[in-house]
Length: 67
Image 1 (tube, rainbow, N blue to C red):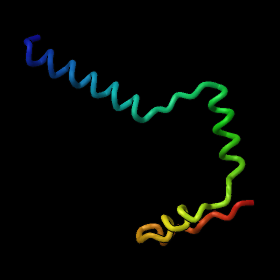
Image 2: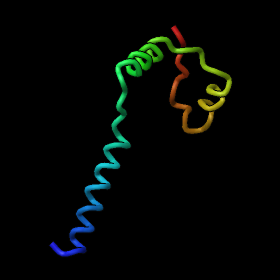
Image 3: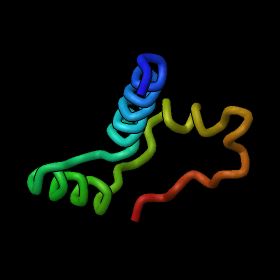
Image 4: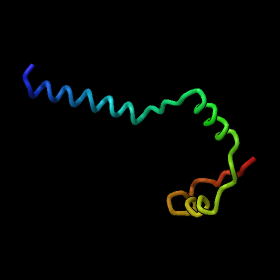
């Protein structure tokens, strides 16, 4: 393998590793438990969130109502 092929193959492998790191979120058991609790107990939308959801592009989404 010549130097150019080596450098290209090394760069490709590194890029794949970086992509994987960006797509996969690793959580500890405690972090996962906390995440699930937060998801299970939504809060009321803030005025800022309502303003954001009113922007063009969000119009086809309904504002979730807390239960």
